[in-house]
Image (cartoon, rainbow, N blue to C red):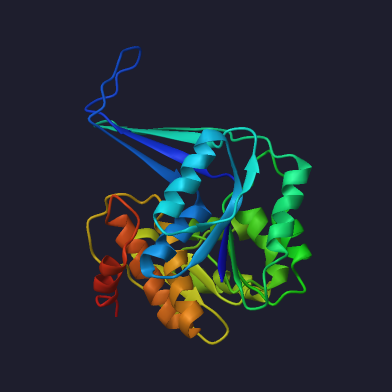
Length: 300
């Protein structure tokens, strides 16, 4: 089974305006409400591709209930820890002048709720896939990734880690199957400036030396790079009109996992990851299987 962990889910409230005017009443042209969070995005896309996963993490209040109901309604299994305070709401206002986002802080998470999540994760079995992604909210210990992975270190899990510099580097000792920094994050991790493909490859391989089994470096519109001990492969992104990049990176991870769990073929999984990330970028919503299959045929 595949499990995704989202520490700080959100209800994403997206509003489209003709033009945002400050100190005035604005009337929306369109509105959309979606469950949000990196791990939740992974679970949604996995479901769209036909793979079953369980979404876990922390939710609370009426907003948490909304997230659970929406995921369940759309076929995603849920097993969240419930808090008293409401899950945060993120507001995105889109108009001719661009986008403005206001992100909520999220609820406080007491120690007993952290332990409840730990107990849920301790039930994972050898061979299960665990995806932990996103930043750590201020309401959790900054080393929560390590606390979880240390608790689970005796289990033979397929670990996928998608987080920022310090968190990612500290998880490499647990030998994740995949980590997915972008090129800017890779530069930040090692305090370098990458000027060409040779430097990109050599810097990415440092993550292999520190313990990761596979590294995918996302390069936005330029595609992505895969490195492991046997393979170095850079692929261009499919051509298309970018509509929305939110969730594209999570979709890449989901596309990789969907194929990797089935075949354990890293190159096939990498190609599907790129197609899935692009399918989300070319759509107002997250990738669906039909679009992924079409784009996959264009990747050489």
